[in-house]
Length: 89
Image (cartoon, rainbow, N blue to C red; front, side, top):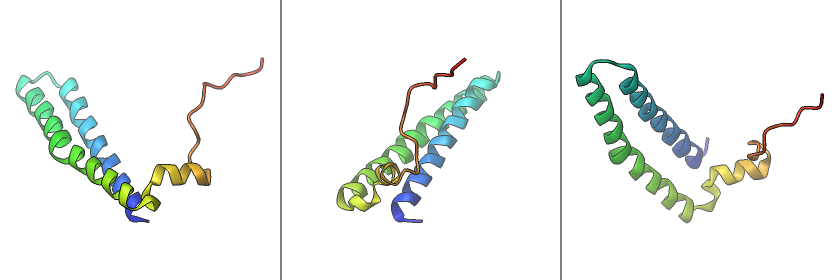
């Protein structure tokens, strides 16, 4: 696994964790827990995810071979966004 892939994987996992915290916030009735989960999600976003995104952008600008998404598209590993499929009846 390349450095670019590892960075993107880490970023995706952190974004998933932040989303889970937001979900916990929405799922609980306890106002103290709601506040805690929202605060943790916001802190994770501002203190970890945003700086890491900046670092990923910097690394990709310095080392274009680490542009994981573009490489995957070129190699045909990831489908391009498309319109919903039309089914013949």
